[in-house]
Amino acid sequence: MEKHSDERKKRINKKAVVGIIGILILLFCVFFYTIYPKLRRVTYSATTLSESTEVIQNPYCGWYQVFAYTLTGIPAPESVEKDKKDLEEDCSLALLEIDLKNFKDTEISEEALQELDSILEVWRCSDAKLILRFVYDLEGNAQATEPSTVEEVCSHMKQVAPYVNKYKDSVYLCQGLFVGNWGEMHGTALCNRTDFLTLLSVWNHEIDSSIFLAVRTPEIWREMLSSLKPITEDEAYTGKLNSRLSLFNDGMLGSITDVGTYDEEASFSEITNYMGKGNRQEEISFQNKLCLFVPNGGEVINDNEYNDLENAVTSLSEMRVSYLNIEYDEAVINKWKSSEIDGENGFKYISKKLGYRYVLEDSDVSGLSFSGQKATYKIDISNQGFAPSYRKFSTTLTLVHTKTKEVKEVKVSADNRLWYPGEDVTLNGTIDCSKLENGYYKLYISMMDSETQQAVSFANTLEKEEYGYCLGQIAIRQK
Image (cartoon, rainbow, N blue to C red; front, side, top):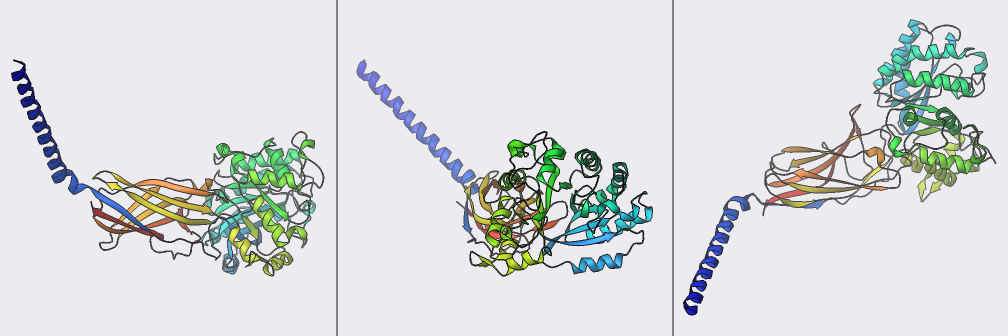
């Protein structure tokens, strides 16, 4: 009985093995005839990437040129057109000083407001982003030309604000609060904390939240926000006042105190009620943190050791400077043009570094793609500038079939505002290959300012093509 039982078990086991083999053969056939034909391999050949030695002009950063307009109520678009044409090629920004001294004791006339509108309309048609500074004085004597009460200034703010907001696609930031010598918030009776708080409250309320505001010193910034600490990444780009209040410094590198912007010997530990200045080292450290999230710029003055080239590069980098006046101080600019750093002309070196400078470092695409599945990409980018971008750009990958010219776009989910200077970032994502034909595709990357549709350039030796910069070639083949 036991012998017959063992034989029966063997026959059952043999049948089970045969059955399993049959199932495996069936699964293999199903795989081979239904799934395998859809299984494709994605391979990638990357372009060799290297940084360009050239200056790359991009929106919202670099050199600016100053153009002054005293409102009279008589529009002169031909003169403004000439100014626009006279903008130096090196400049990607224009600072428009709008002088309101003719309306010191009265409302701004409708004719003058229309003149302001015509000025902004002409400049909107340029590639330059605009910095606005409303002033009552262009001679350093604001006491004689600006209103005697803060209420009158507030009234003027409310009058001009709709025209500024109308051109918010062109206006990048507004410097100052109308008052002070040259609009620099010093030198008159209205330049005190109480008046500044009143003016800033009105200006912040009236101006579109997409436009940055700027005050003259870190000390004023702290007073206006009642804070001794710069904002953090979590607080940035919310549209609230603390996330849009930036700095401008028209005494930059002018002395150990930047001509009174800092104190020579005082310390943050001595500040009470948010009023007071730190020494140079403390104030530059403050700007280093704050200006990761808001712009910093101005003009350099007074040929001295603090703006000798190597010292200047160190300070501009630490302060995260993104824009400077190309015409002032001429002696300092010429000093940079006749100096070298790291074997490169000083003026060119600083021009390259002002603001953000995105460099494509490497790229990779890989993966097996079933119908409905995706390949993965990885793109390494570094920011070699002094500062971040404070505007969010849209980034797109484009695949172009080398024969059929089929085009597929892939939107990249990334916030370039967080690509900090001196740091590397990696863009990761997937590409849906399910509807792509087999063949070879060139992979391009492009970046654009969504507000103005202006392209943003990478600082690479690659030539920009129709779809951007060619990162490499993708081959999609049958497995």
